[in-house]
Amino acid sequence: MMKQLFASVLLGGLSAISTPEITLNKVHDPIYEQANLRFEKYFFEPTQETAYLIEDAKGKDIPEESGIDQISFSKYDAVELSGINNYDYWKVEVDGKTYYLEKDSITLDEEVIQDMKEQEEAKRQEQLKTNWNGPVLSPSAGTIVGPSGKETYYNLPMEGVVSIMRGMGNNDPYWVREDGVKMLGDYVMVAAHLGLHPRGSIVDSSLGKAIVCDTGGFAHSNPNQLDIATAW
Image 1 (spheres, rainbow, N blue to C red):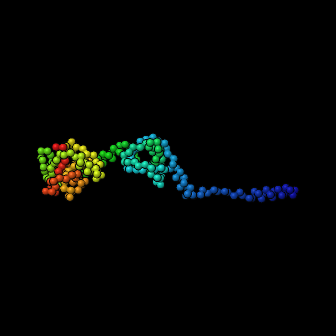
Image 2: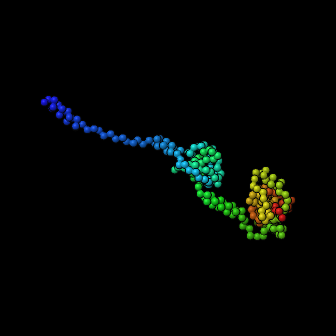
Image 3: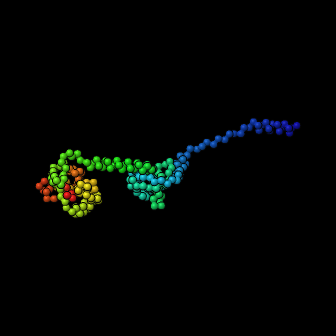
């Protein structure tokens, strides 16, 4: 009888004891989250596309701003895109080596590049124009008064003149325009008074923007005169 009573008391006591509920709260760890985010930047979805640079950029050794610059890319360069993700740097391949470029510095749309080039060319041509509405120098005219003063023309070998400009650091191509005007890059080649217009100066002429490359005896009597190099 006593054993039964003891057992009843014991069981009743155990039933009155409740098991505590254990709750695991997720600890907010900024260091862990930052490390995890950085880890994800190194995973890329494989792709094989041609990308085009919309600006000069550097290829880094890791896909992070803190990475070391390894290679230089020029605006409009084409590169092989090999990996993309949702972060700031994408993976490219050059000669079998991997680099990481800011995704905002490239485009996959070749038409975007073509539009950019056309806009730049239109802007360049606009800058080369003069607002001159007067007479234009020609073989028949011989001499005129242009936007900067008297204009004449001469036809002499230009190797020495071009060599001087090269020595000054100008590497623009020398060529002859369809109308027979000799050019250095985008500019008409002219001789002028070097005290008034030093070599390399850009001046207006009736035939377009001109670059001073030479001088002559005329400059002493007329410092505002331009002698334009032509094949006439």
